[in-house]
Image (cartoon, rainbow over all chains, first blue to last red; front, top):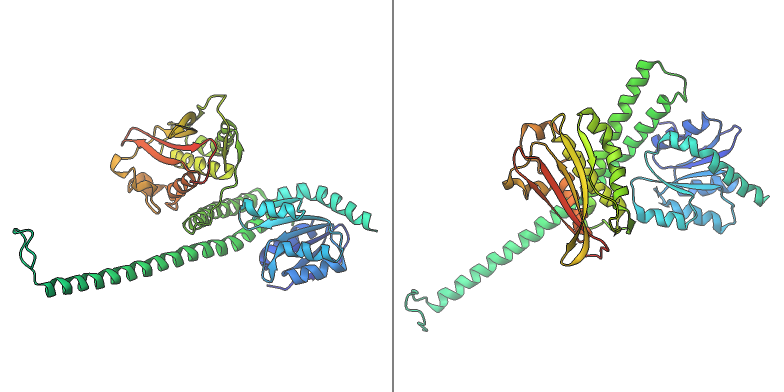
Length: 140
Length: 276
């Protein structure tokens, strides 16, 4: 598989996809870049923190199980250095209510079970981005 | 030598001692063997959980890629292309549902299932599960009926898990009821040792289950062998999972049925379920 991790040129709201399975990440990348978004891709928590620090996303799609740690740590680490994140949507591998509570406590707007219906994603994305973008506006 | 019982043959003390020593050695060997088998069983359970998780990831990606094609995000499709993609998505989602069952089972075996309780409106939950199963029932021209009346007390239970139990029972009822039959869900006030409870029922006019199989079917990997069950390809875990989820709530599950007379699967859930 082509390594696509990193920032993509383009216009539109910034969506950062954090997902360690390259194939799953690629599907989401195609979905968002083909529908008018500027997409960044990270396969690890470390890379996600780096990308979000350089260019805070309007929408952060965050897989919870990453090779170098818990997805929620990405939120903690970014908040610790004062990055105003956009809307965070957690992606989990299976329905696990315990995780849901923990995600909400970390400020995730929603917790979705994979595979997420792309219709649901596209329907909700504008609202998430609007809310996330406002947060970014407050910052500057 | 003590001869308290004249009917028993006399034993030499040495012989008795060596016999005891021999039995103790065999007992220790049996305990070691049990421990070995238990450890192996636990490793297999862990393997199940891991493999299920690893199967889910690529399968999820397949479904998402297919949905992107289906919705024309990469260009419009012809109707036959659309139908073919729908087939990929349907198959992928079916496979995911089965993998999820295995994962739930393995978690239950490993004691990793926990309850997240909230007050549940029983009738509303049953309606929701029925609605989800309507397309399946319609395909077999089955009558699907909600018999539970209004005014049932709310139950403090794990909503997703109760829905899972009802869904598994309903799935079986639909699978094992011939075309044109009836399937229903019901809920009634009941009690468990005097404490208020709800008795759920999923019934059907299907092929029924012989009484000698009533316990067997709640064991994992069990499917009573019949042409109907061979046609119904399941993981064989549905009822074992249902039993575990009900017992996790401090309830119990059983079936009332006879061959050719349909089945009534019933389970009790305490209204304010404490951990058993």
